[in-house]
Image (cartoon, rainbow, N blue to C red):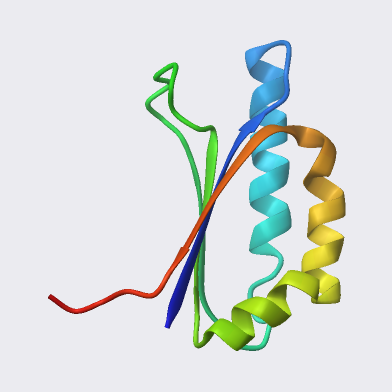
Length: 102
């Protein structure tokens, strides 16, 4: 299994604009459920802490293999979502890892 986590900060001059951007990102990524081969789990969270150093939105996904994650990167549905949210973000952070047992 491979975990793929992405966090964004969003555009917006007001809390209302930022909330709309966060909601759009959430809707767009949630639309991928059941459409991507090898995508085992998809979860989108919107930050509730409002701490100044926190990101606004997080995407947490699990893939059955690195090959599935690699295919996701160029999958047409993922490309559609990327287009929908591209102008909504001002920063993006990503971590991909394979969990290990301790």
